[in-house]
Image (cartoon, rainbow, N blue to C red; front, side):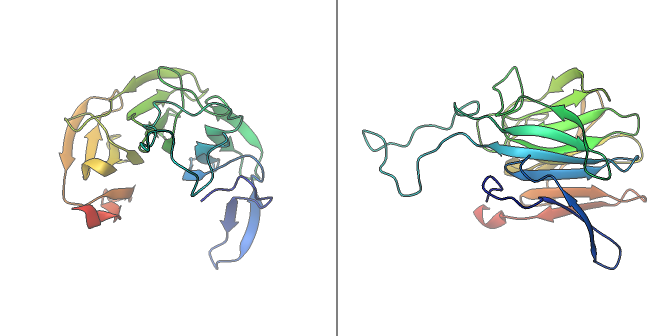
Amino acid sequence: NSCLDSTRDPVLKFDATGALVRSFGAGLVVFPHGITVDRDGNVWIVDGNDNAPRAARGAAPPPGGTPAPLPMGPPPGGTKGHQVFKFSPDGKVLLTLGKPGGAAAPDYFFQPNDVLVAPNGDIFVGEGHGGGNGRVFKFDRTGKLIKTFGKLGSAAGEFNQPHALAMDSQGRLFVADRTNNRVQVFDQDGKYLAETKAFGRPSGVYIDRNDNLYVADSESQST
């Protein structure tokens, strides 16, 4: 589940007939997890993992037989990953958010999930994919951090895997709070407005021009 050893382009553009017209991004991302296209046609990719060395599958457990707890930040040794990339329509890197290999709070990112660009150019990033964190970042169009909101938890305004982002015509931010089995709604300053639990584990969200909310519900076998 990684592009780390691949020389292929992870970002593919198809025309309306399904024909491949362009690809780019080879060697830049480890785990391309979230994608959005802004109003100028720029392509944003979220890299949700890193290239830090890890024990091989099937390796013996650590002394005592108890697996190590999930870290609150990326493991040491990573030089790539846990970043957000803005590409031009032809694949040129225009902006990068986050440190190569990631960073723990209060720095960023560790396991970012998705990115959304508001009509005014502000950038929202959801972070936390099971690594003990859960928050949403807001940046201005230049990549300057404005604020963060939320933390790991299940109360209103808290997150456990803020997995996908969408925005309606009123400018409200919808967050697929996957492990909490809900979609939460915020204003653009991070104020909690509402939530719906009509879904199991929402993994993707999309809002159309008529403000209909579409949710991809996956991995609901746990409940």
